[in-house]
Amino acid sequence: MGNHLDRITHLSYSELPTGDPSGVEKEELRVGVAYFFSDEEEEVDDGGGGGGGGGYPCASQEGPGAVSELEYSAFCSQECIFSKLRENQDLNVYSAKTLLSMCKPGDLVELVSTSQAPHWAVYELNDQVIHLHEGEIRKDSLTEIGRGRRGRIVNSRYRFRPLPSDLVLQNATGHLGLNSGEICWTNSESFAAWCRFGKREFKKGGEAHSAAQQYFLKVHFDAGTRSGHAHTLVFRSLEDMIWERRRVDASGILKELSLGVNGGKE
Image (cartoon, rainbow, N blue to C red; front, side, top):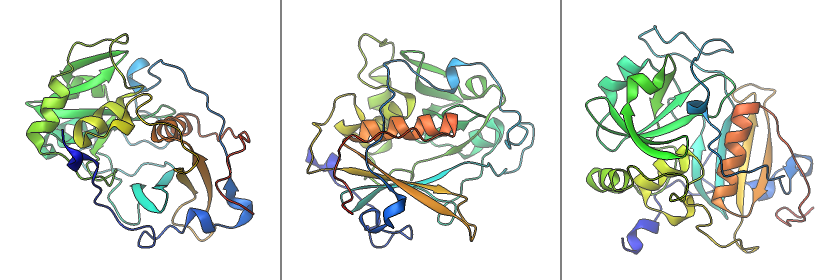
């Protein structure tokens, strides 16, 4: 694939209404994050079932439902590359039946569940999705892998320029059957996002860690309220940032450790 895969279509850093990570108040900036990583898939598809409890609406409801969850914005240098903010996008979730009526081939689907990281998949056609599940790239029924969870389409979550839908599906189907010894993605989100955007940064070890290029993840607590506040975390690669955000989604806990990354001088 050509260099066009790396072009970005996104809001500029100043246009996104979340503030500048390099300009946040001193007490908000958390420089360096402990990396609690493994090569194992850590997400919802590992643990069976359910989306009940914890603020998640019942999957039998057909209408949109609100979810109590953290909101994020992320930047590479001064460019917004990721946004999950209720103020500028629809974060409602839907039953699998309703979601199927909304999906088109090549769409990215996110399934949510209480106290687990979201599970991402690439929608193919006729209720079929391709996804990374338990160390294997496989094809399954969306309604079956939902198992009562609710979901949404997340095509615009990352602000990179997407590939045409036929290439997205080609990326996904071309890796069907690969297992943990052959794949180079550490979670379902990275795999699905790579299929749609084709950027090597989503792959395990896909970019060299560089002090000159840093990623900023702004975690918004109590977003949308007058008392809302945020912490900004600094990472050396997109892979590291994705993993930490997913871990926080699953646990609700920020585990921080100074790594000497000089991402926000005081």
